[in-house]
Amino acid sequence: MASHISSSIVVLLASLFLTSQTFSSVLIASAAIPDQNDLDLLEFPLNLEYLEAEFFLFGALGHGLDVVAPNLTGGGPPPIGARAAKLDPLVRDVIYQFALQEVGHLRAIKSTVKGFPRPLLNLSKASFAEIMDSAFGKPLSPPFDPYANSINYLLASYVIPYVGLTGYVGANPLLQNATSKKLVAGLLGVESGQDAVIRALLYERRALKVHPYGNSVAKFTNRISTLRNKLGGSGLKDEGLKVPKLQGAEGETEGNILAGDKYSMAYARSPEEILRIVYGGGDEHVPGGFYPKGAKGRIATSYLHSN
Image (tube, rainbow, N blue to C red; front, top):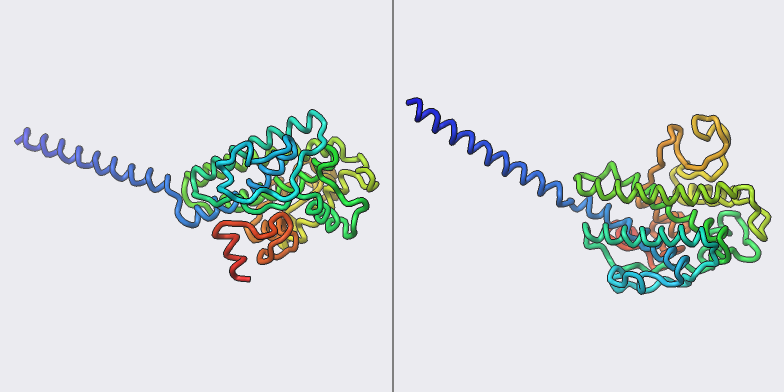
């Protein structure tokens, strides 16, 4: 009898172990396969990663993905107007590192989602000049040229990575599985670092007058941030290098080397808000700005089709 009971216990334990292992395998498999909502949220940032990769690659090297990583373009058209910038050695080194990081980001996202070919990007002098004219509410003379020197290029760079990082902050709580969250956390960490480096380099020069406009670096950043708040249409989610003291960290400083809310937490933006900004017109349904034919992916194209 004792032997029979022991055998039954062994069989029961073995059954429980196998059930547990099977259940664990199902959980692991489930965690590794993002659902459609996650896939859409992971796919959307490719638009901005393509933009950053091309802008930084051309700025540092004078050529882009078609030379450095043609397999990542998916056959999409080359960017309009991108060119090498006249950068000092330090800034060129930093931007080159950023460029390679963006190539890595494209690889990381495309290893998780199918993605889409590179969208048509307008990285011309005229595109950036239009942004700066909008920021100042009048045409700058001569038109702003992002490729003219290191300061102009850093100010142009200020326009881009921050928008992407707010998108990752906004997407994170909407993601369902561990694979998706791990990917976004990794991307957000480096995008935030890039924005911090750009802001630090500009903060060091915040009082410098941007030639020939007579406006300081800090004023340029404040105007750009004000424009992005206006285009985003969702209140304060963007701050320049100098803010009213009560708006600074703990209400104690006008210096604003990093943007953050009243708790010094990163601001979040939705895909709709991002499209309103990068299209340059405040409307997620109307392409323009950096994306003359619109951004790609299920989220972005849903707004184009509903226009």
